[in-house]
Image 1 (cartoon, rainbow over the protein chains, first blue to last red):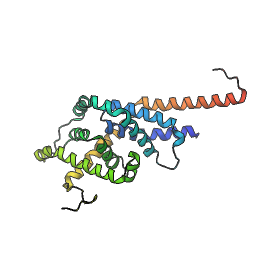
Image 2: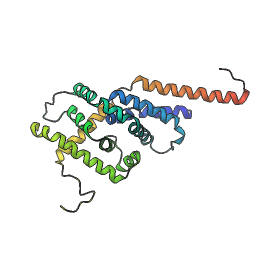
Image 3: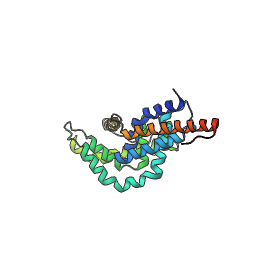
Length: 167
Length: 70
């Protein structure tokens, strides 16, 4: 396999993760696909700066979150409400087991500040350690930890009223 | 409690609810992970690969016989 083909198939294998991070970061499928597309193009162009043996996923996530925070955040705010509502309607299914359903969780997640949501997703869902997340976000490990803690507390607060009524 | 270290600052979340939040997050993320990849993303990679191959071929042609017309 040539170097080009190898890099291409490695990127292909990371597309699901990139999409998952993009969608949970931006809260919108449409923006997410644009964001993935731009990340892939940047990564392709910057191929030479990837250090073999290091995590390709972490490298790609770094490119993506920097792109998101420099370009997409504004756009997200503009459509956030309508898009969030539409998404909530789409995934909303009645929770019969007395637990909070995914749509409630999703809208609570979207209300978190960007930096806290990002930290929570990286550590709580993408499977990165706090150290790796800190490197991706370009901040201190302690900052990641406190963002994750604050994110959890806020989610709890947002969902407390519902859970008190439902549980 | 007056001592506030980074680690002891962790709020006393009720464990079942905290676990539930973690599950919800993983469920949401997992559901996106299992979605099919949009064709435009895989096609983008095909295009990037094709463009790079062409560029490399063009470079090697130019370096050997100098008069390549496209």
